[in-house]
Image (cartoon, rainbow, N blue to C red):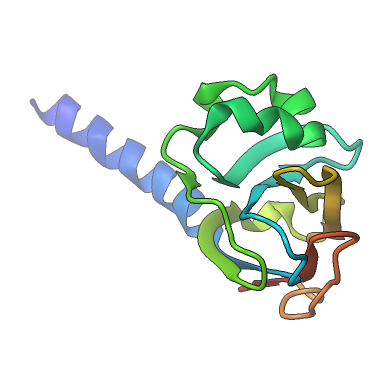
Length: 156
C-alpha cells in the first residue's frame, strides 16, 4: 500500500508542473456584415511548417458543410474525432464568436500560428481568412481577415 501511495504522490508531483505550463487563451472572432447567412468557422493551430496541430473550435454543427472550411478540412480529413465536444452554432454576419481554450506556454513565440477558415452559404469559401503568429506580444492586437472576418484577437 505504501508503494502505491508513494508512486501516486510522485506521479502527481511530476504531472502538476506540466499542467501549470498551460494558460487559458480567449479567441474572439468578429464577422463583417457581409449580407449572407451565418458563417461556419474553424479555429485551429498550425506548427512552424504549416501543418495542423490542433482544432480549437468549429462553429457550425452540420458536418456536410465542413468541407467548405477547406484548409482545415484538408488537414483533418473532416474527422469527427477532431471536433467532438468543440463545436457550436454558426456565427451570423456582424456577430462575434468568443471561445476560451487552454494552450501550452511552449507554443508561444515558437513559430505556431492561429488560423481561422470561414465559409458562408452560397458565398465563396475563405481558407485562412485569418492567420496570425501565436506570440505573447500579439495578444490583444486585432487582426483583420481577408473576406468574412472583420477582426480577430486572442487574449491571455
